[in-house]
Image (cartoon, rainbow, N blue to C red; front, side, top):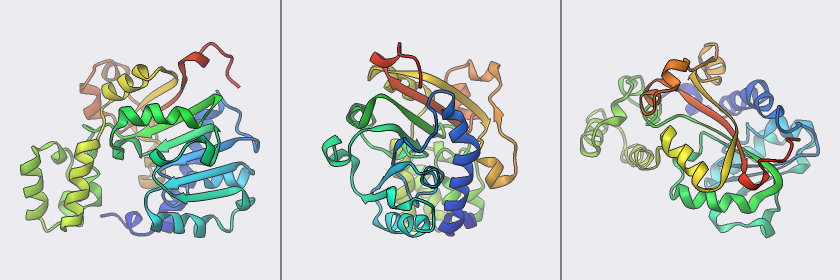
Length: 270
């Protein structure tokens, strides 16, 4: 397990840097990033991804199932400019609707969709929070990428640095985790990710099947966030690999995309 997984303040800072340097510019070609935006993040954690929007003066809402993460989000963003416009809720997004929190210009899900159960239902439910010209940003690791199982959170130094072993059959995977001394809580968490992890083809199918369209889609060989974490320069996936379904999942560390509702696809982007 790396220090950032226990040092939540560091994790918050890394999220804020990545959002400022990479995610905001990625979105800005299609939606002007101004203080007039209403921004929703589902699975907001400590709120680092929302901090740059708070600093800008945007009205933001962060939702997370973890009460601990919500309390950290309130704490970490308390010193940020215009933080009075930030609301953090310990809620299940499936239990909320537009009457509860309103509609948004931008919805963000960064490293979250691979943790969500009933993903088809989630894409349907997401629509109730979008303004007519709203956009949704996704950033996530494909399930078959080297660390798609999130095994970097393992306490075992060996397992935390071992790629692809999350692709083992369930029984064998659990056995390896227990053999190397992982707690039952860690085992349960990693097995759950094995149930919800999502590949590129499935994600594209969910987008298309639920009447969204891609405004922009980028597959990365080196995740932009790796610059903050490891000092590695971002690199878009090689075209030859990106063109091969399934194979690309094994060698791509991240997918970024912006989607909008299909009925809005003919409108000129803001």
